[in-house]
Length: 213
Image (cartoon, rainbow, N blue to C red; front, side, top):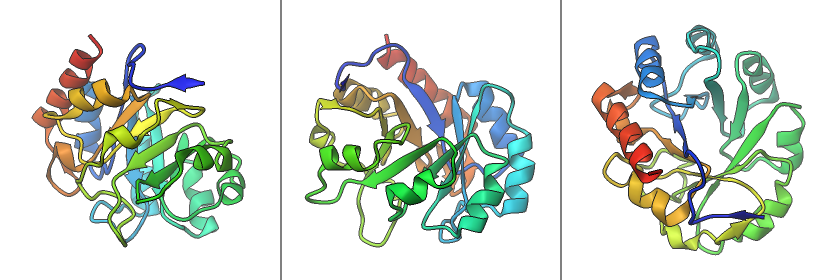
């Protein structure tokens, strides 16, 4: 059983929506543990498979490369997997679908009204964790909005990756409230969609470290 609300050890940091090699270098230098690449064409941060190949090659050892998919064609997931360490499913994928690629994966859940996280934990029991994001109808992620963190039960049988509207200004508060395994940020460290701000990345990491004491 995993207890949230009590940060244990070091909170991991995922910067998502990377589109440029220079931003990858700056993210790694700032201290990111994982970098996310969006392979969903509906996103302003979308990268193609050929772009992913180039970007993932710039990621050094011991930094996790995460691919974000939204109800993607199996052929795309399979092709991209060769250049990724972890798959992130952000659509309506079933557990069987996620497991079918035989790669480590996490499931993103949008915190819509009535969502039962305990049921989701049982359904996605093979996942490496649950990414919890804000809910906006018709938008699978990247809204830049927070949600009520108190809705996350103190005890879940899966690690929580907290997303949704995080910035250098609120991430320490979020960690104190939820105690997640990791925090995931995209828009909160950008000057425009897909273009990261080096000073914001440094500030975000600094605030996470401060929250960890």
